[in-house]
Length: 248
Ligand code: SAM
Image (tube, rainbow, N blue to C red; front, side):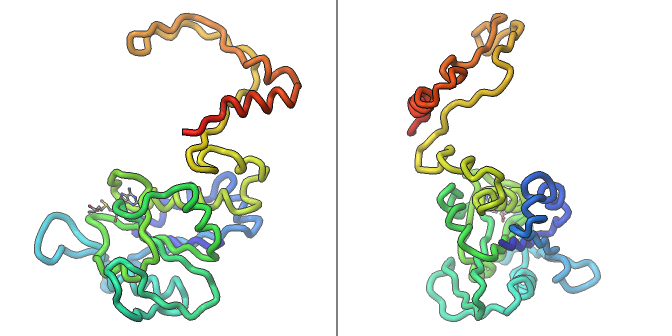
């Protein structure tokens, strides 16, 4: 899968994308990340990408003409507005067999879920539009297939949301996570499911008193592992895990 990221802060991406499993997945040819600097598509010496809002008001707005020029290049075959339905629907036809999805990161978008991330793995190319300042000129949304929010709060820009989408989608592409079992029966894999508790070595951890947590005093003690997990009895372990996995 190819991720095209359009941003005015391209340098924020490589440190995260070129580490760990995402780095290995690129080497294996499973993922390709292309980061595009929106300023490269802005005219003039200063490559200005924003302007004041019509009608007045605080802050600056990302210009639609520059974003559209960039999108035309990134999607590789131009975009045509066909017919107007609603201001937020996709009005784009693409003459390509590539399954492309253009996503505007937006705090007012549909909140990202595991099911959405899974659905997005069915595309060949995801184009992620990162807003900044007061956001996009509304006309940008004519070229977005969907708006995604990563939660009900407002961040400074779309770069962290883009990385969150990339991370959530990438790990569900076969081969990205080493053991395919890891992404089966994990939290959110079905609605409301919360994975059972997990432990690793050492078997016992002696801790000193850690003062107070609120009004509760944390005395010195030994933290152990449930016996059943050390028993080697796979049937019992399975039952224990079923018991302690939760459905919210
Ligand atoms: N004025 C906008 C509003 O009230 O909806 C907020 C703009 S925000 C400061 C700038 C950009 O950050 C947005 O265009 C979007 O790309 C990104 N952003 C901020 N919070 C986000 C969130 N929760 N989910 C996805 N993107 C977000």
